[in-house]
Image (cartoon, rainbow, N blue to C red):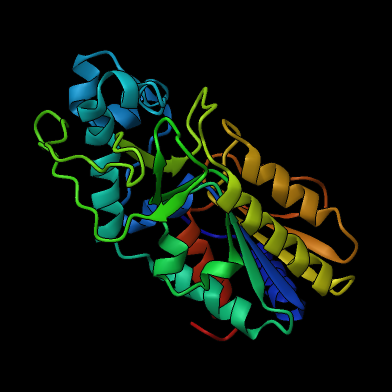
Length: 280
């Protein structure tokens, strides 16, 4: 894909002049690392063929009821993802974003709907990341019996790759012994404990307040319109005084007036901008 050099230069100028870097990331950010694209049923079924046979979509599987009715299926899906994310190395675009954030006088902050922990694996400080939909690397009771959230640590989930069924033992709540679940916001989820994400949001707002009216560049990567949380956040940030939006998206690059819109995957665009900055 050929990138418009004028757009790349405009984006580079915004990064160069920014006092702070806000990164917004959706599911498309992980595609260049080899993570599956769940966009639409076909993308989901390509990654999880057994669920096609059962007529189950991503929305069907991302539902907390499975931990009550069929925890082996629930952990077959989430255990496979936990193992996959642990094994995946973040692509170079993460390092580029971290370098830009580290170079900015006010630093940077990440707002992501991804639950994979890839930004932390790439070296971003945990206290500079807001995971608005939670984290697969953290667990909670599926009941829940309390508001406790704990690090998944070395918890292992063995998954049959043919059936995507998890084998015993499954992660348990240390307090009540009930099956545990990832601390992730699922569909129709009234049991998600959002305390951790709320604390992350408070830290983000403190960062925004500290940046004040100095220039901020908002770099949005791979955030679609199906679940537009990240796009809304980035547009809201870009509406602030002296803030600008760079939207990178191969399928849905449309952006508000004044934004830099780059129709590209995250890695290619970030590399091109970094090269324009002299870091390539």
